Image (cartoon, rainbow, N blue to C red; front, side):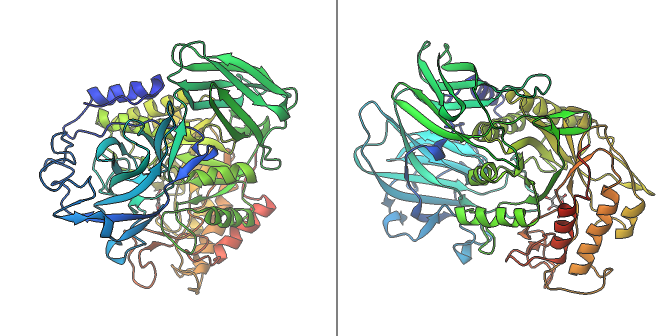
Amino acid sequence: MIRLPQQDSSLSRIVLLFAFATPVLAQPPLQTLIVGVDHRTTTSLNGDWHYLIDQSPGRALYTPTGSINDKSYGMNNHATIVGPHNEEYDFSTAPTLKVPGDWNTQVPQLFNYEGVVWYQRDFDAQPKPGSRTFLHIGAANYRSHVWVNQKRVCDHEGGYTPFDCEVTSVVHTGSNFVVIAVDATRLVDGIPSVGIDWFNYGGLTRDVSLVTVPKAFIDDYDVHLAHGPAWQAGNTELTGYVHVLDAPAGTAVTLDIPEAGVKTTVSTDAEGRAPFTVKASKLTLWSPESPKLYKVTLASGDDKVTDDIGFRDIRVDGTRILLNGKAVFLQGANMHAEAPVRGGRVNTDQDVTTIFGYLKDLNANFVRLAHYPHDERMERIADRDGIMVWSEIPLWQHISYDKPEVYAKATYMLNEMIRRDRNKASVILWSVSNETPNNATRTTFLTNLANEARKLDPTRLITSAIIGPAAHGNQMVNDDPFTKALDVVGQNEYIGWYTGVPEDADTMHWTLPEKPIIMSEFGAEAKAGNHGATNQRWTEEQQAYVLQHQLTMLAKIPQLRGTTPWILMDFRSPTRNIPHLQDGYNRKGLISEDGKKKQAFFTMQKAYKDHTVGKPE
Ligand code: GCU
């Protein structure tokens, strides 16, 4: 039985779809997601957690069919790994892992481990009468199953988005006991599926905390600049909604933005949702040049949350991208979520500062967070520093497009991504996929998903990265029907690396949709410090030479409105194994994984500084 989390209708509808489309492989129930947790007072559960490797999860977690069977689910026979110990294990004397953290880079024996690890820690709580307590998990890759005080509280699928488990009924005053089984196994029907070109770091890879809120509390909100059919200079109208979970109709909600001269009180409808529209007396719009953020306080009953929100307008006009009515060209780079120098999945505040330092040094105003939602810190810093963001769910290449339950998963992940970051001005593009096969089943799946994204957030642009077409002589034609569903088309291509020679780009002619185009991937591999002639692959010189010829080609594409070379930093990938050149890393970075800038970095840095890559209009 799939439990419907306390969600607003959109998410519950998905869960219902999910429930009735439940396939052979029973899927875990889906969870609440509280917006703005990083702006609430929480009790951190980061730190040392005991762990057990479980290479036989069928005994304690999944039945042999792999389905989750309530009878055996964590409670079967003597291998019930939800209590402190039994005759097979003892958490109190087990080794520990750091949370947040992937297990791969913490324990050498776990470097290539992609199975189940059971995490455990004690925590103290003093729940106030009438309050509610949620366990917030910033991300756990890939599936997670949670018990508190030996009671199962929630499950989640998806390795890159947060979820919140309500634990009110099981947490007691004093010491409590949480166990989380994290399963990094890649699933054919997962998102992403089994074949990926990045490292499948497993574990509790982002912050874990306890969130205490009143009985009726603000779990979701959307505060944005009114987005009419056309850009209106001087527009200072703010609109959106505040959702108060479990509030009766008519509950008062206050929106207060002192610096914008906004204070208004509205009330919730029967669904707990309080829509509002209000004029700000003065408003400085957010932009890379002036990344203005406002303190926005939302209050209802005993609950209050204050967020930092920027207001801006993003839209397409013909083949132009308009930010606050002005045509922009997006000069950026791709990023995977890995810590500079240290490596691993976790992005600390310092890591994010380093990464945005690289982007600023590159003269970038844009970043594509490939291929999945990154740590929320990335968007927070992007908001603060004025870097525009492409955010994406991990529908990477081959997914089971023919399965309704996979569509439901994709829609749920899309909801989680949009819900977490819809109040981040830096995010201008939602991407629903990367390099997917051009066939009717996939086009229907992704067109529906793109339309779902647009319905969830009509204020942003919807995009996807399309795989590079085969060249026919000096012609490259993107006639992918899926692009009809997109506002902005991302185009990947590797002329001079995977196809042809670098000089082919000089005379390449592109036929592309009459829409804004972002060349969302291009580049070549080079090991930092490996030098040679420009026709010697794997040298810094050849990588820079490929980019120079790419730039010649890109400048001729009239509707090009952005570029993100693949990729800012070398990153771990299990598919990159040429000894002494790759050694487990994809080497298309402009910077090595340990922070060395390659010649290619300076090629892009100069092109961006001189604004020679493309034109805003
Ligand atoms: C693809 C894909 C990336 C991959 C890159 C590469 O375009 O989108 O995820 O890493 O190419 O082959 O390096």
